[in-house]
Length: 214
Ligand code: HEM
Image (cartoon, rainbow, N blue to C red; front, side, top):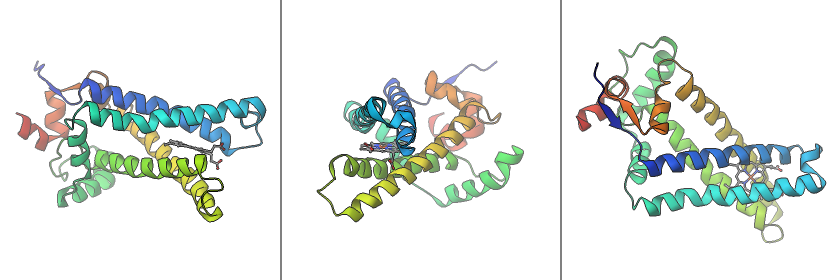
């Protein structure tokens, strides 16, 4: 049996991922409580605690990518971001093949060779980053903007904050399903727990990256 493994994510990147994930879960829960103001967790002392937790975790959520970039001194993390935001013609063709064929049939014959990230993973990273900026900017307006900005800016911030949070949550649910349950891709979770994946997995799912690293 071939037991060669490929390092996919460094310890720092994994620490960032799990901190980001845990803070996201608490932000989504505390945010959801605030979204339904007539239930008990949004009122009186429980409501205050909930608001405090949301703000506290928001600071961690916004600080972790900045700290990770500074600590990794541009290596790994920034390279991965650059790769995820670089879309080539084949990425669009891959995305089409993924959603119209591969995810339903596991047939990868029409799938162009994928790099370190598949087109689906790239889409997820791009979307989470854009939504992160929306949720952070609008969240800061909600936090500090009362009386400082025109009321329309405040109202739009409430709408955009909720919408971006909803989109992020939907994509996180799909992401969890694909990395832990879906039979074709559920080995991916090993990369975020151990940092490594098997050679066979890389050859099958990321042949372009495999060719570069071989
Ligand atoms: C990135 C940093 C974030 C900041 C600075 C932030 C800040 C805030 C603030 C100040 C509020 C108003 C709370 C109040 O009523 O007192 C709020 C509400 C809310 N947040 Fe966040 N938040 C952030 C991230 C998130 C994330 C990641 C989610 C969900 C995934 C989220 C979901 C919500 C929801 C659903 C509400 C309720 C909106 C409403 O009342 O209409 N937030 N946020």
